[in-house]
Length: 327
Image (cartoon, rainbow, N blue to C red; front, side):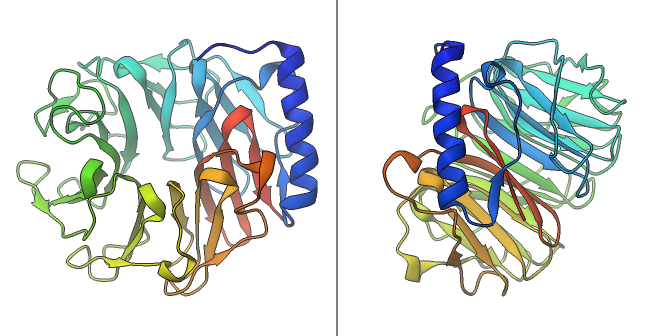
């Protein structure tokens, strides 16, 4: 990806802000920094509560807010690699992953970042920690690595293999969730949903009922979870992944859905291509197109990730450095 000039970026930003004010209704642009700093896409976003959040993206960008998105500070990530996943345990302790095996950690909310030795150069997409010590990371070619000491050392638990392109080798894993140090889920290419109950020694394929690439997943407890992906796919489970049911069929979606997050077993948001934002208040039995979604013309830009930390408080990371929040 080629960096655009500050002038061109400013034009894009002004267009997006104008569109947002008109088309997004209850959603508004949260990031109002210098337009010259808004180059590249924001791929991941995570809030530990309605005030403290972080967003990561292209060229090693990491942004942080401690006031609910009223302002964002650009942090020194110490890398120029594209970053894809972010997860924080609390307002101080967090982890970020990205290209070339990049794995970063912080213990002061992002003021200082330490590069961890992930023992891989593979593209890493998803990261999830149970606590400050126990976490998993997933990436291309069925890579899963785990740590029990806060990232000081990492152990391949799914065969972390040599790098492969998307669609090559074993299916890539794009997101991960843990419930205990033994039980967790991964999702990825070709309809992949897998569950382990022994820390990754063995994996049980879940019957997704689709061969679409699956990009993001969220669970609010061990029973209720959701997965989104290619071609407008939204799947939900109420029995811990034993069965997955297709949701949102009435909307006839074709957009690639990139992110999903639930604040409770009933209330959730799913986002994706072409400014698509969907919301549900019944656990996904019905989804409605939000006022910010499925717009036409120049509003067809991509929303990459969503964080829903508290009722009526949600944030979306998008291309061109845009961050949206609902009001």
